[in-house]
Image 1 (spheres, rainbow over the protein chains, first blue to last red):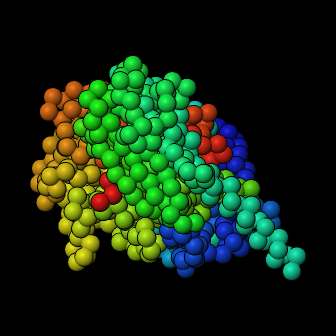
Image 2: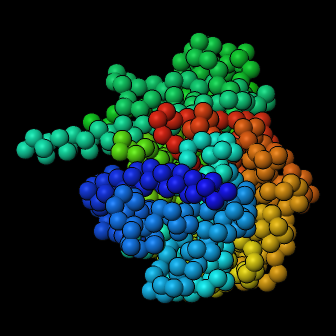
Length: 197
Length: 431
């Protein structure tokens, strides 16, 4: 049983690695291309807006560190970098139109709550997502509710409210392309991203 | 030098194809009761006009599903004004309406256009006008003539000179996405990009003056609401509170925005007075999602989506707050309300066995009519005359726009080839 869990954890790690690499490229290219938002007027005269995209690049940031650390230094390093720790699991999933935490995610969440409790200076960004079905605006709210539900669970177990940033992307950032239950299941999620890692 | 040249080449390659590409409108189902109309190709003396005005008008009327223009080969002659019309002959065609007109060049830049619409049976002119416009105004003028023909023959307001706003999404070669907010003519022609971003853009909503759009942009890493002026391109952030800032909806007088904000910990409906920045909270239900407000035409009430009953349903509440009253009862999922300009018909996304359709509900009787069939339909937006509903759908895993008449009989597809289009919003009638 324990072995199974470990394997699952490792698989998740590998899966996260895949996502992270993609996400990482995305953000660095975004930077290279310069201004992120461009407004065009009636004459299609393109002018840049000095909008920042700073917080957008936080996503996947935590997991990215994990990849490098996984190879080299988790011995004696930060427990966050240990691929065998339940802390390495940074995504939890939900049932359709639900924000209830699933039983199989409780171990993961307990570990994160304990870590946050022991490290009160650490902050974590919870990013809620939904599958593509139904209203986009409703899904935006549902993604936030999922993230808040995770925050609530972590707070009940010792984390403090100041340690959280909560965001929702609704159905706008699906993790898996596809229009079936297999894809939807992977997209109904909250990502736990440690800030500055 | 070479590098710079390459960079600009890439920019062009990225920009050109989708700047130029218009939505293609296809009528996928029509009304049997379509009125025949004879549209004679407009005369132009010895030159070819930069825009085929009568073809644009013919497309408009045909696309509405209310008219069936006669094929050109059936037309018995090519009159361009009343003196050239023999009404007795035209009566044989059994078309009540006859549209004629001509275009002449005033100078290289300006054109004179005149049109006349006749009642063939009475031999009378129903409407006729003459205009002078620059070449760039010819297409818009054609839509205005379509509006007048439509109104003269149906008694209803035409919406051909309105515009559509929508969000288009393209995959970049590096795996990132490019979101653009676009505005096109009502026939999908002349698409212009009014905003582009690497982050999602959502929920465009027109002010009643047709000059401002409110929308949600994630450019700062989270949902925030912006208002942008169409002429100048000038934009302002109007809501960037902690938590969600989303679902903007203009009040009928264009002075207030209803919004969804979760700054108090849970998504609630608020009303923001734009001039003063005064914010008032409308809903108080800390357990439920309250979102997607839309103003009733009376300016006093809002419709919105809430899951306070367990599942998303549509409710009505006074814009000053107070108790909300449930409006939808049929089905387990009703969301994304929009309301017809007469305040009588509610359009919504209606969930049925895990599929999502566009449906309308008569607010007096409560009767629900499901209008669409694909099961992946969302974001309904009424035409300003209340006859058609524009919505987003999916075909071959590809987002596209479609429109359906409120009786479900006329279906149109607004096709696109290489990108996803979604989040449509039909503009009000330009004053």
